[in-house]
Length: 187
Image 1 (cartoon, one colour):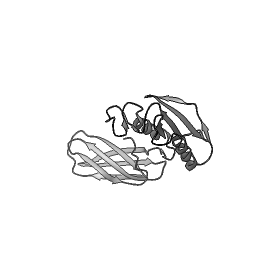
Image 2: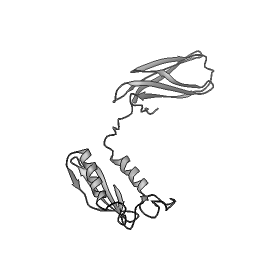
Image 3: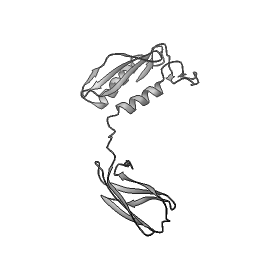
Image 4: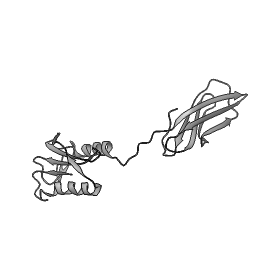
């Protein structure tokens, strides 16, 4: 929650009240942290939950009236203040660093990959592991005289796929796996 110390359009008590309401939505107990300075004449009172995770911030902007605290380059009129706290940057940083509901599953890892050549046919084999579930697909990229960019090379624990009619020459390649959460392995 953010509010200006010179905002008398909305009662001053609503800022802390709204932040307290957000903590009630989360449930549990909270600990008030030490007030910290926010660039642009702001002060922030953080509140952490019982697990020590930051859940709410109460930001008071000194001297700001009833306005949205934008960043430099804003119109600075019609209830927008570009002279104070850069709240869009603050809130994006807050969400990115403190959203505990977003699971950050590890991407799949390729456990094996090989290629063999017989005449003008290249056969690519691979296998991967996904700690979050199963492998939804493999992608094979071969760079050389006859390009291959196959995003449907296979699925499951492993695959083997033959590419016929490849021209003679030097090739480089990569195989990646896409897991059940949509994350892609390193090549």
